[in-house]
Length: 636
Image (cartoon, rainbow, N blue to C red; front, side):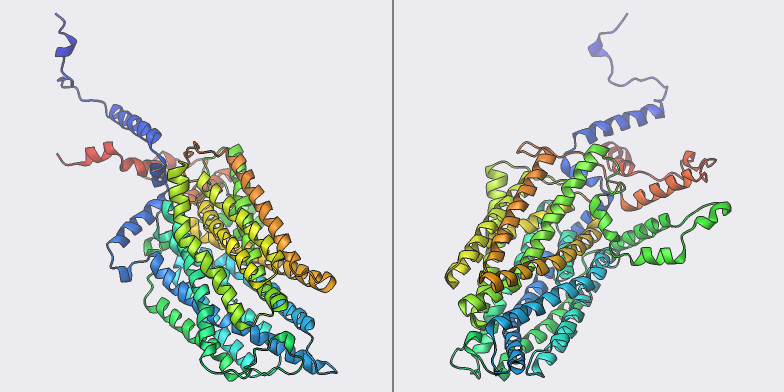
């Protein structure tokens, strides 16, 4: 007689064991359901590189704070470096103007210094700086990021600062030992200080360091903190430089400006005091990095990046039968490939091996999005660097600025940006956008928080540039610079958004590629904007026209961000797309096997059928950590 269903046992008491294949199928089914239900954090775990970095971050939490890589450890030297640089920058610019004036006085028959001629001469000097430095650093910046993935961030930070320090010592000697402008020597010292990548590479490595030590959802604010440390140093430095200048009594006590001088201009011994302080401070920063600051990338991560590089290098080696050995690339071809400084830019096009699971249509959209974001970020950098020179030229010409006013303007501009990044940035992103408007933070693509912050920054910066162009006094000029400080919100958001499209092992290489592209933009930017400034000044006596051009470019950047929003169909309800990323090594190995298969070397190979030779996929590795597998591994 049949027993009621409720009386039947849950498990059969039969002696026949369950088929192992059924157990495996059951486990796979459970894992499939589990993987279908995971949120973006769990999908993030599928990135093998991210898992390794997260393990390192967890280990860092148990390390003493003095030996722990953190935002503080990179922020402190960045702050003091910026302080040292900016403490002597305004004085260095004023001394450069005086040396240029002395040069023109000696060349003039009347022995007078023409203020417009001095403006044009110094503009040409800055323009030469920009062009030659950009050309030199272009060969370096694309390599440093990738090499820092393999050997660590710290060695290259040391190298950049050491070269900068040596160049600053030589520049001080050139300015101190001559009474007029030595154009060629000044350019040579500027080039020497940028042989290892210059300030753009320094900031890129700082971003790499921060990205190594913080979780993805903390990156916008953490990257903003890094830039804020830079701005705080840049804001305090001019004040400190002015304090150093006010200690002794300078040669000129009648507060005369360059427009008041038509003869030889004396330079006091004490005017070089901020430059001496800069050299000492940079040396101390270098010692801090050498002996105190810990490395952010673990030996495990560095070894993995080196192994991945070797694996990718093997793709360029032709593994072919002897009858086609003549098709191997020549030594010249290999050398050209090795020194090709534009090669890292390929990463910005989101190669197939970086996102192998995306369908072609989505991959094309993602590539367009990345190109737009990177281009906008590079344009911001080019405009910012170009305008730093023009601010000083504009202030000296229109408002008769001296070293004191130059220092105050730089201090206000940088301190306002620091306040925006440290105080207002978390309020805007967390309180207003995430909690107030319920915007979601996506870990693998550009999101509404990034969009809103970028548009806000671009709009305020555009308005501030219009105010600069129309400013009738120094006060209004500083108001315009304060409005522009909201533009500081955009850069950390763009950097954080671009990282989302790539695996963790590519961070250094990615920042190296973006710094290379930024360098190309900074090659064209100063040439373009300084030419606009010189032309508008010489022909129409309208030096503020360049600010209106930059304002239009900021509006163009805003439109580009709206295009990105349209391509990604972003709104407040946008959910993260499930993206499976393989590790860099696995991707390289897969590509190599595909090439070998195409050449017929794997046609008769049955190694793929041998379970001992088959390497587990990322999904298999993740499955080993699943709930089912953990429960089965617990000893009974």
